Length: 281
Image (cartoon, rainbow, N blue to C red; front, side, top):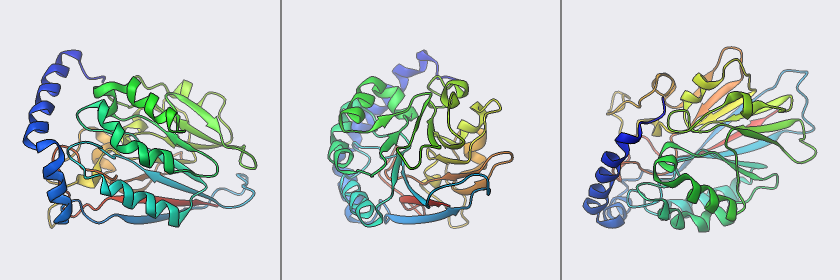
């Protein structure tokens, strides 16, 4: 269900209060220096396609999500991610939304990363709920100006020799206006489903994908010693698929990332940020 407009003034007022309490990023800087953002790592997956789904060679996909540029995330984390991408050198880079927290103007903190994070076959992005709440038009424009192709209920084929592979990006499942019919219309035989949230599964309406990527959950962000998140995310599929690889009936696997930045407060506990690298064979 799309968020009601009557809730938006309350949310914006709450975010203004948080922005003040977080001292416009100084608390995040303190947390980062003490290790409170966790340690960025790389999580690797391999997906073997059915014999009839032919690729000319293995395709390496990088996926990063939930940056939350602004007072909750120290920008040094974006530099660490850029350095990791330079080492991994994926063929394609996918971005899963929630680029900012609190204010669309915070996208400025991410623009150096966006301009530098290049992949030979392109960089593709969807928007997240924080982007929709705080100014989707401004954020989408900043992404496009940095050379990122923004996919809102549409798909695009990769350049040769991977023309059979389509990146299918849907609008945010809860705050946007998702349309699976538009997202997959005319897509190729190999469909990579890019959704901000695992709850993009509820929007499929019978459409099929070969491999899916989602973020949003932060892997719990603050996780108890028993592995349970301090606060569970909203949405059936976000609760059912909070982090990792999940085999989806009638589709390919769904890879859910813990994301990069911090939401709400500048702290991660037992839920380190991650870059996902998936090799499609």
